[in-house]
Length: 271
Image (cartoon, rainbow, N blue to C red; front, side, top):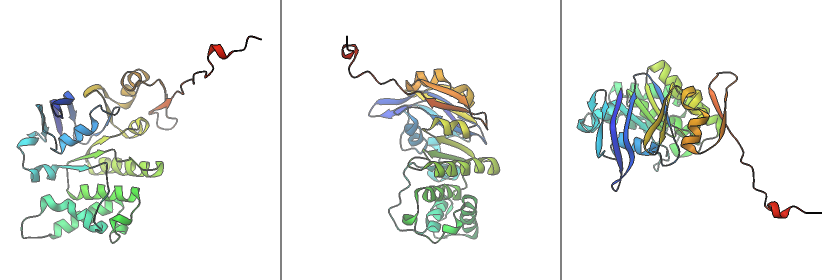
């Protein structure tokens, strides 16, 4: 579905991604993790063509991303950004309908198929009951589901989500990722998710890619990637990895650092 080959891209001549190779198979749910500055957001910005590679290429469905028309890209790839704020008081249905833009023809307006696609996207995401509400009046979790619905209205083959659980409480994090996995499983949608939370990555991913300094450090099933050695090497953190009691997925436990003695050895009394 997506093939990234020797991708080098950055800002002002300073590369962030450095010769990255990455493939995403059809129907896969791939999670990309890594510390701040490892290139996760740069990868998303490159997929949206906001950044142009200095070296390498990206193939979407076998076609060079930069040789495709924007409309054709948007019919295959939809992105849910980390920031979900909407500055206009649109209704939820109007926001979701914006996802049909790549399919609209000049002067023709919406067709029955467009309206059906919007209705189906709202049904799949459970946002149909919110159709008439203003997007500005929704909670963070509700708004995130609406943004997923807008992306689904594009009828993409690949859905990219950049930190979809950012700023959400744990209940809404699980709600959004349950939704994404359900769409992946029932609709055959290929999904690439950027996540900070390693435990959520372990619970939801078919495969995890761990980035370090713009390169792929580890790539494979969660149990092979989310190891104590890899986390120490990439994040500089000593952790304990245990198995989830229900799913068997790896779960990362942060080990507390011992606080230094404020008095030191000199503070120990001699008498």
